[in-house]
Image (cartoon, rainbow, N blue to C red; front, side, top):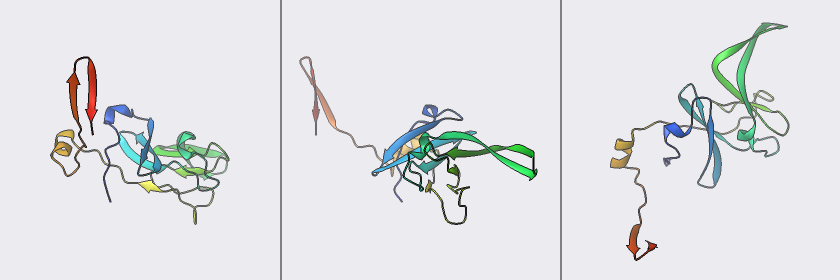
Length: 137
């Protein structure tokens, strides 16, 4: 699997998200308690932009009428038809045995280490001539 640098950690605050396009796929990058998760931005039900839905805490219940919020566990609700998915795993709560949104592995890596490779940023020569900036490809 190829790695892609998609954001500095400061761009996505705790509880926040950022939509990125990588290799023709839109992916939502979520920061949940300073842990990062990636989820495809497409609901399996009818193709809605899943990552634009509401993020909320997962709940659990030991009996009818009682529930509690599960710390650090977040769900996302599809903006079109309210299908619900676990952000960490992509598992659907509407059809947990057969529906799962694609979840992507996300790591945080030190910038100095990334600069050494194997991930290398593509560079282009830039020259200033008079009052114009010219990009050489």
